[in-house]
Amino acid sequence: MKHLLSIDELSTDEILQLFETAADMHDVQGREVKKLPALRGRTVVNMFFEDSTRTRSSFEIAGKWLSADVINVSAKGSSASKGESLRDTVLTVCAMGVDGLVIRHPASGAAVQVSQWVDAAVINAGDGMHEHPTQALLDAYTLQRHLGSLEGRHVAIIGDLTHSRVFRSNVQCLTRLGARVTVVAPPTLMPSGIAAWSAAAGFETSYDADSVLPDADAVMMLRVQRERMSGAFFPSAREYTVGYGLTRNRLALLKPDVPICHPGPMNRGLEIAADAADAAQSVVLEQVSSGLAIRMAVLYHLLAGSSEGGVA
Amino acid sequence: MPAPDEAVPDPASDRAVRTVLDARDISRALTRISHELLERNKGATDLVLLGLHTRGVPLARRIAERIASVEGAPVAVGELDVTMYRDDLRSQPTRRAHRTALPPSGIDGKVVVLVDDVLFSGRTIRAALDALADLGRPAAVRLAVLVDRGHRELPIRADHVGKNLPSALAERVSVRLSEVDGTDEVTIS
Image (tube, rainbow over all chains, first blue to last red; front, side):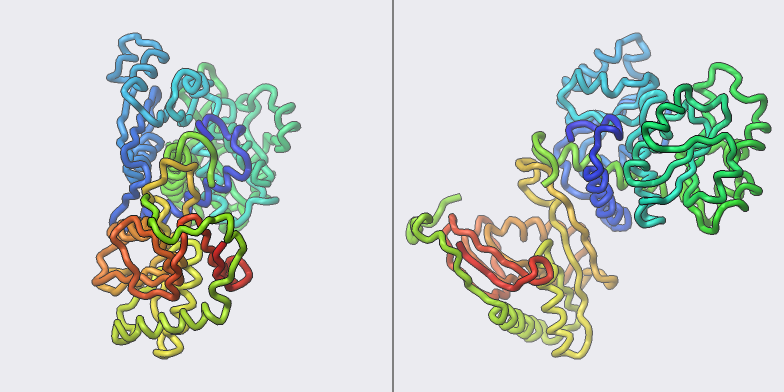
């Protein structure tokens, strides 16, 4: 494993190894000295060409707790805003001797492209509407901690599928771990061509949240991504909430103690009601702490050992 | 890594596997170490046994059982993983980390006994001492090993040794324990 670009290129074994390492890293969060020396002397650059709070700070803290030097570069305030191309920005930063490059970019495929330009290990922290692998890993890891094995468990993913990289990574990761996945969206937010994809990848699609929820072992709500919407995908916010939001009424349809995930940031009152977001079974904040553990595990696996070879 | 000048037997002539300790020898050695620990510490109060992954963990548990049966009270036992603290992380493919689990009472102000199967270069123990410094401040740290095979590369020695086993650098000392390997023995080959 040289880069982490998509879930697709991870083997099931590699995913489970990352989970095991993440479990060890999780313990570090409870310690007084939250520091491991494994990445001493390594440099990690966070390049964020899109806004982010949790992913960027999570990667930053993960790197620092492993003793790496972490530098943040964001599009605003960098040479990118003066018109420098992505390639030049990336090569400039890597010329400073960077070992790991965490990149988020609004263009799908940006991380793969960057990995072909540089020697550093590239981690995809979200590329357009394509993939967000660490989010999928942390979601599956969180669910596994609640449900035990994901084998045969039914996960419902509900929301804006068209614009969601979280859904694209998650559906691959969850099905790989043996979960049954049903994705739910209004017809306008269902990606085109999903019928062929779902048939090939073995997940189900539905337009009706109310019929899926009673059978779910876990629910994952997705954010309505207004910043990526160029047209009108639903008549009004109210209408979306009535059809697809996790409202108090829908919460009552769930089996007891079914974990509720949301990758954040939440649009409270739109795709998720406060009753659901703050319910005892909501694992939203746990996802954040799992995210830190997963990102530590990813950085450790990519950067700690010699550059050749996998995990011993 | 200078090998000692004398006593380096031709490795080819002595490739046969020889059992140095059998199950009963191991059991006796651990019983003796348990008593030594109690004597040195004047009882089991404030004692914390930390096994080093992989085979130090079952050894620490066995010593804890023996101490508990002598003293009539349980002794704190935990496990310590030093992967992140190794000085050879970078020269090898990424190593799998294991879990570090401290007893709930912690290690601050306690007498921590590190337990490992083989003491060789001393680098694992160096890493363990660094790991301990991040976890707390013990009153004292001691080291108990089942086998000391020599060839130290750092100024480290064990306080309690099951068996001193002079060995050539090229020889291979293997410890097998029933919890991990299904059988109890120490071999040299």
